Image (cartoon, rainbow over all chains, first blue to last red; front, side, top):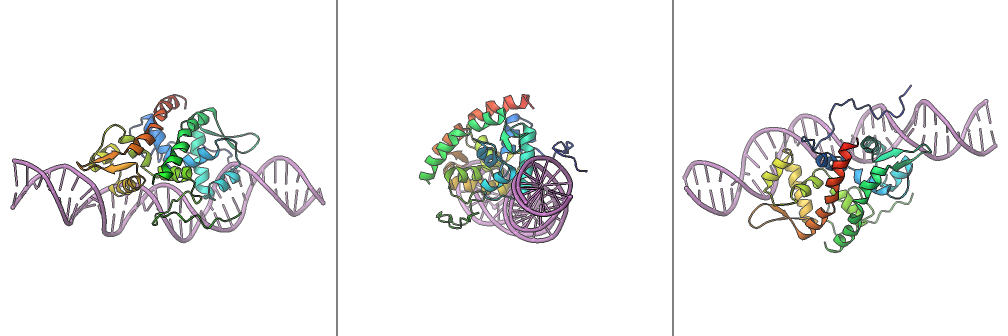
Length: 115
Length: 115
DNA sequence: GCATTGCGCTACGTTTATTGTAGCACGGGA
DNA sequence: TCCCGTGCTACAATAAACGTAGCGCAATGC
C-alpha cells in the first residue's frame, strides 16, 4: 500500500538546498528556482491549473521523474498545490512569486532583439 | 503531438537551449536562468564586479568548471562582461535583468516566515 | 459486472550536467 | 628573477535529468 501524497518523505536528509549553505532566504529561493524546470513550471501554471500530463506537454515532454520532483519541491515550498478537483495550480504565494516574473516576459522580448 | 522539429534555426552554435525547443524568448531565458548558479551569479554581481575567484567564494566554492560555463553563457547572452580592469560585472542589460529580481528579495523574506 | 480512459506518480537503465581537485598560461609588480 | 593573482581548463567521480515503461486508483462507458 503506497503512501499517497508522500511529499514529506524527505526526512531532512538535506540533499536539498544545494546552492546555499548559508540559509539566507534569498539563497534558498534562488537555489530552488535554479533547478531545472522550476521556473518553467511556475511560468506554465501562470494563468490556469494544469494536470501533470498537460504540464508535461507544455514543458517539451520533460521526463515525469524530474517534473514530479519539482512539483513536490514547489508544493513543499508552498508555491504550488494539487487541487482537489485534480491538476496542479498556483497557491496565493505562488501567484505572488509569479508576479515578480512578469517583467521578465517583457524583458525577454527586448533581450531577444538585442542579441 | 506535433513534433516541431525545425526550431533549430537559432544561429546558435551548439550548446542548445535545453529546456526550450520553441525558441520563444521567455523560454530561452527561463532555461538559461534555470541552470545551476545562473541566478546566483547574477545576484552576487548585483552591486559590484567580482573576480572569478571572489565570485566563486561568494557562491559557496562552487566548482570553477560550471562557474566558467555559466559566465560564458551569461556573457554570450549579454548580461555579464569581463571588465578590462579584470573581474566580472553586469552589463546594462544585466542590470536591467537583475532589477526584475529585486522584488524577489522581499518575497524571499516573507516566504521564509511562511513555511 | 469489466473493460477503458485519464489521473498522479514511480522504477530503472542510460545519458548528461555538476562536482572536486589539480593545474595551466599570462601579466604585473617587487 | 620569483611570487602572486588573474581567467580558465582537464579529468575522473558523483549527482541530476532523461526516456520509457508501467503501477494503483477513480471515474466513466458498455
